[in-house]
Structure formats: C-alpha cells, structure tokens
Image 1 (cartoon, one colour):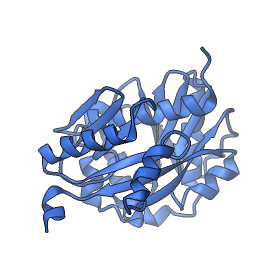
Image 2: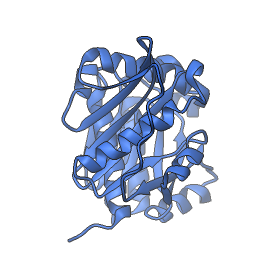
Image 3: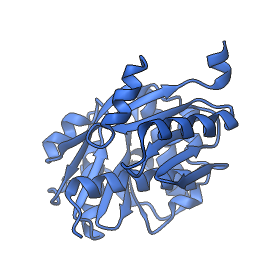
Length: 267
C-alpha cells in the first residue's frame, strides 16, 4: 500500500520520538498496544523527554489517557501528550471537555521535492556531521538557540546525553562554521520513504545571516537524496515563515497538552 504524504510525515514524527529516546540516558520508551510513552533522562515534562503519543488511531481516547496516567504516575513525573488534529480529534475533544487547553499549537509541515540550495557565504564552511566533535557543536549551537524558545540550555543538553548515538545511518547533520566557530546547524532523521528536519538552530551572533535557512535547505535535500518521498518538520514561530518560503506546506497541526506530576497535582 502506498502511503500518503501526510502518513509518511506522521510516521517520521513517531520515528523521531524513538530516535530521541535512543539519544537520552537513561530513558524508558514503551511502545505497545498502539501507544508510545517515553520517560526520558530527567523529569522535565516536555515533548521528546516525558511524553505520550497514540500510534494506532483505533485505541480509544479514554484508554490512551488512562495508560499515560498509570505510566507516568509510576515514574512520579509530569508529561506532555502530543495530539495531531487530523488523527486525534477524539483525544483533543476529551481533553478540552475536561478543561485542559494546549500548551502549544504548532504547524506540521511537509515538502515533496528538493529545494534550491543556497550559495555558501564567503568565510563560511559547511561540514557534515561525522564525528563526536560535530555532535558537540550541534549541541552547543542548539543549547544557545533554543533559549529563545524558552527551553533552558541545560535541558537542551539533556536531549543529547548519548552523543555517539547521533552518529547513526538514520541521522544526517550539517554544521556551519565561520573562523572555526560553530554558528548554525540542522539534522535530518530518516524513516524509509519519509525524512524529517529537526534541531534547526543558529547562535545569537549569526541570526538573520541566512545560515539557518542554508542548513535547512541542506537537511531537506539530504532527506530526498537518501530516498525519501516526503520531508517534514514541526515549525516554531521563528521558523515557520522560512519554511513556507522554501515550499513547505502545512498538512496538520500538533497540539501539546501538559499534565503535572502527581506531586504537583497533589499540591
């Protein structure tokens, strides 16, 4: 059966969650009965750290919510539930009926053809991620860049607790340097006929220099070169206009609902 572009893109999101579980230490990732639940390296209740997503749309919303509550109660942690508007309407309705509102609402975007690559500015060098030094530079860039999205640098670093795990055939990365200083980066995660662009980041000193877009173009085309029919990403407010300009289109929206830890709820 040929999967639709949206199905391939959604499958990549699920694969990205599994990949992030491999990068963290320790991490418990349980995927059974159509639900994926991840308890990451610490108790930070964010997506890709402590989170749950329904993999099989046939699992009733009430069952997903109960299993998530049971799993994270055992961990003593809060967590984020990821819901896609096209696939999880019943989950979203149940949560909103209980009085919850999403913490975030992000466009899920995809593109179905390679993009034109940017000219590399004079004095800038692009390197493909092949060594632990490159991975460390990716982490350094994003630790600074994602503070603009209110993600503390220390929490960004926790996502990459097993840096050697990024040196995988499933992961492609690019780092832009000027005078040996790492300034911008983007990663591509492969999932068969789908690929996804993740961890696009640029240091404060290099913002509005075009390097983020340059790395995004390279990461997009790397997915197609690896055999993907579709390349996807979940956009931040900073990145959405850039991705639209490149030719990405919104195919879905991702809502994130935050559940407090049992201790917080008790207080």
